[in-house]
Amino acid sequence: MSVSRRSLLAAGGAIGAAGAAGLVAAPATAGSGEAAGGGGRRVRTGFDRLAADGYAALAGQRVGMVSNPTGVTADVRHIVDVMHADDRVDLVAVFGPEHGFRGTAQAGGSEGRYDDPATGLPVYDTYQKSGQALADIFTASGVDTVVFDIQDVGARFYTYIWTLYDCMVAAVSAGKRFVVLDRPNPVTGRAALGPVLDKAYATFVGREPIAQAHGMTVAELARLFNAEFLAKPVELATVRMSGWRRRDFFDATGLPWVPPSPNMPTPETALVYAGTCLFEGTNLSEGRGTTRPFELLGAEGVDRRWAEAANALELPGVRFREAYFTPTFSKFQGRTVGGVQLHVHDREAFDPVRTGVALLVTARRAWPGFAWRPDRWIDKLTGSSTVRTMIDAGAGVDEITAAWQRGLTAFRALRAEHLLYK
Image (cartoon, rainbow, N blue to C red; front, side, top):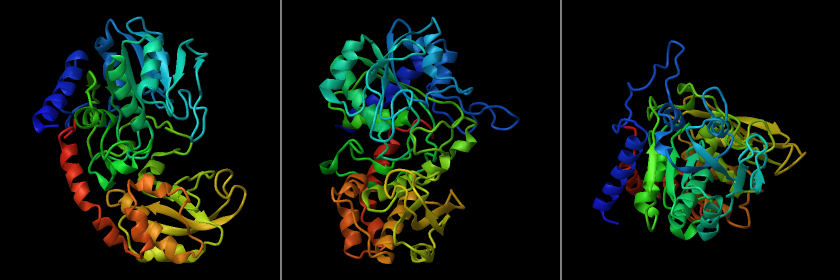
């Protein structure tokens, strides 16, 4: 795709959203929105701005919402409940992702097809559905416009962004318009970090070549997907936030945190997730079944030597504590294991992806029982076999991170073309 076409598509999506929703087309700046101090709420989400404009962007449309428990207002009412009660919008269907629309399912599960007891709306299951099968669901629902509003956590392998991608592709096939209501990237949008996916390793935890920590909001990702990766672009509108700054962590937004999935209980979990989720690809526990998933890592037979080795690297912004825990489910259920707990003391300096790789390197050296999952899941998470094979060959952290810099530099340049907030 030529640069001119990319630029045209990106500009069209931003202007279309701003015009349809009655919003200014200029990107939000550090001084825009409400003040964070003085008890005022500074950040207004895409839904806040859509509703304040009387749902003008959805006028005359039969609307279907792709959402989950994170689709809430500032006073934690679900936006589907709010829209259903408002005569200004014709909401006719809901589409649920992994974990379900109301969030009743664990990792790798969904709620299936049902009628929502609170609203009576039909809820369609989108999890692990794509292409024509998903397009057929949109057609059967009778909607004209599909609206996406889900809180992301900033990591390539968090599946909601690929639900976004799959829904955009399906909307093209079904002839539906697509609207994305923006929410903050909870770990900031300052920079992209980590390896970029090799398309040969594309799965539902990474459809397209983006960085492991992408540093974008969902509306920015939608613009990127539409301009760079969709064979035919969807009719896309994005409703941006006001008051969000790229340097903002989630606690600076004044918004309520709703766990996007059962093992993402706090913004602190999201802070480490882009690195420590890599332990899903090993025989160590990634902390599922504890109160600190992805902050606690370990296995039977691991002792203080792992924490000592990790601390010896003097990674910026983080320290490691020797820890023991007993998962209530998932790996090592009901068994006491040893390992580490991450303590991030300077989140500005902390690099989650480099830290995750460093923990893999030190775990392999400190614990003779270390092994990769037989299905090579680690390759799906990192986006290629490079990290795994380099660790197996005895490479150090600096050597491994150097291997992805060329691809990351190219992605950063591409990413810059689609950012809404400067």
